[in-house]
Image 1 (cartoon, rainbow, N blue to C red):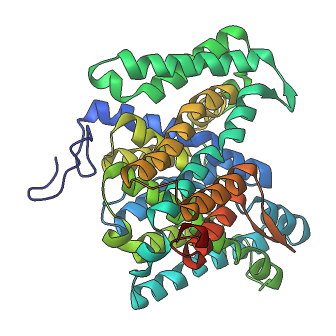
Image 2 (image 1 turned 45 degrees about the vertical axis):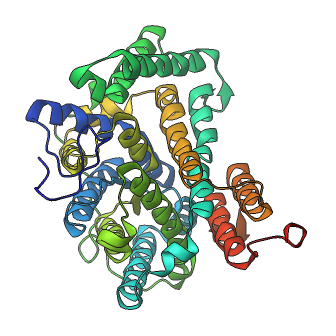
Image 3 (image 1 turned 135 degrees about the vertical axis):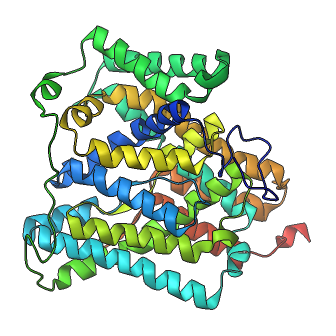
Length: 426
């Protein structure tokens, strides 16, 4: 349980330092594992890497993150989508050795920024990220992913499939029912139960392929690619130029997720443990992934959604999910079984997860009594929401500022340059 004289969130069923009993612990950790699994293994599939390594590196990275932040931040690190285009380009032109370098360079950028913040401090964060910026940005984090949820729910290999959408809606309905009407331990795992229920329904309607599960071995070692062991290091300028700048984009996402976590758990993670530690942990996780053959890592909004819905914020649960990820990366049949979960099941769950994140942003605006009769507040919110949700992005060569990152940057700039009152309001 939580230590004495330590703040405890009264709204949490299990707070950050609360340790669940063993059997509930397994169920709660599986819930997080199932939630992040699809996205984490999709990234390596898209860039031609071994999904088992991605699962392994996500688990190791999360455990490292928990260790470095001293168990104060309940976050899960999974494969980052921001680097996909750059990795695909490097893979085609220079092969994985260059990709690994690029991943490591991006992690080093994190470490450098963490070092600068450690020396210069982070008092500027409250000035740069006030509620009028944070609220809309968090809404963008949730709603910006809405299209992904809808596509997972509706499309079968690019074509609309009514059967897929039915599975997504049934999964959504099951999850809502479990969340609203169950009591006790079962009320803490509505996401896991929703995934299981949706999977069984998908099995009934015939959209689950179990052939890969049957063919998979029980034990398999991931196809690790160790630098200096499986290949020699040769400096790649293309890797440095194409991937290191993307770290600044994922750092923006990192801060956005930290905002949501702070709001969800009623803490200020920018002050304790501080950006210097969270960025350092995220960067070191990415560097390790690059050394062993995995994709870069980042914190996952899906798992933050689980925290918000279940009110189970225990870092032990996230650590348990990470241990299971490492274990399952060596168990072929279990990995294949989880991977066989159809996309509409994930889509149905995502309708809730991403919506809860967006609702957290709206709550920030309400709790801070943001006055939208003031033109300044209206301008900032409008620009952030439409740019972020609309999918606008800035691309210069191989560098791309994603819609979420671009919306955040524009929100910060508008907050810094716009006067408190418009001339017409004076």
